[in-house]
Image (cartoon, rainbow over the protein chains, first blue to last red):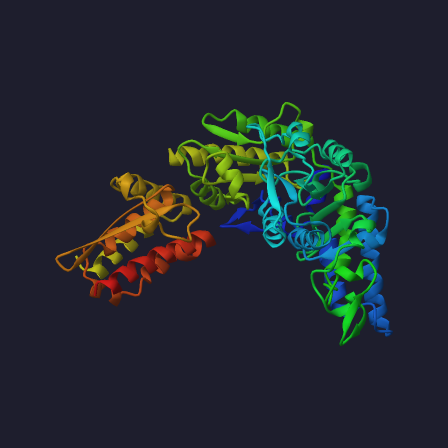
Length: 402
Length: 136
């Protein structure tokens, strides 16, 4: 049995059918499926280790706390963060970036400052900065993408001015699927003394991530896109910066002392983890990271789909490159004479799950002059057979509509 | 043909197709056949919210009857609009308000279309009902 077929047995949802047809799940960039190991860990937490963390001395609380903190160690090692206290657990990348935007805004941003944000960003790496700019009287500056979808990093030095405090870019765009040259961006930022936040929601899924080698200051990602339980997320940040940033939420274990006159905050990471944590979901990071490391995305599936799509007459692929090693197996496109919603509906009835619409990136849709796109995103458990079935089904769907 | 008879006829037509793809083929045909909606009427106030595709609906009252014309940039949606128009256009507001729109459930269109589409469909129905209520 091939590696892919073996892996597939770990993901129970792959065995289900829709409309009496085998499910071909190609919406992994939105939410990945979960392996047995993650589901089992989740259930074990819920069945045996339900207790509040950190403060209670009883046995189940100690076990729950250990499991939670073990997950922090696993995530630290996974992204090669210098310190475990720099790993903040959140409910997802959106939460992570909002938390960062609030803290950075309060600690480092004044009226008239500038924040540079990539043109292809997911709304979750755009709207929090708009909100922060409105609060602080700062200005948002766009770092454009080329027609190919490639980030115009060449323009970055010219966009950075004396008021620029921060640059925010995705590691891999959720629409374009291109790996952005984060190291280059980080070098430019360092030269100019500007902070860099990377949205790694797609980045952690497809490649090993080393935040120290990348040279960024913040790295945010979700668990639900990389086989972990939904409602999990991480913000990694440099200790020196995180310590200066005020928390966004108050209450729970995030305090040091509380008096009527005022309160002081707990040290990292608890300062940023207000309220009762997701005690069942967070321990799932351990098996999720394990399976992410075991699975390698076969390049042949990506290369086959890429070449098949660009060969379809009237199909416009967004996010193109001569070097396919820079492309994640994530393909957004439009087809002349076939609306993305119609295509998605027809493919659904063939058993294929794809995403259609604006992909949480309305400004990018405007940039390319479209009202929406269709996106097929592959995971290592997707087979070449599925890829071929997707391409032939797409042909059929286009035919039906034209 | 009464409103109810028209609905029964559509349910009958639709039941001929067992496979979902055949039902879609049928809706696509209906969508393609729906007459041209003038470009100048594709305005913000005629746009129905809640659809992944864009839908424009125009209403006219003539001799106490409501006449609907509509368009969409997606063809399956346009097919569904065509069904709605064939049932509700040319009826009195009272006739429309007396109907519970459950024939769409019978067709399976409400539950089997994607959630965003179902929302769009509900918005469309809501708009038709609202126009009827305004003109009662």
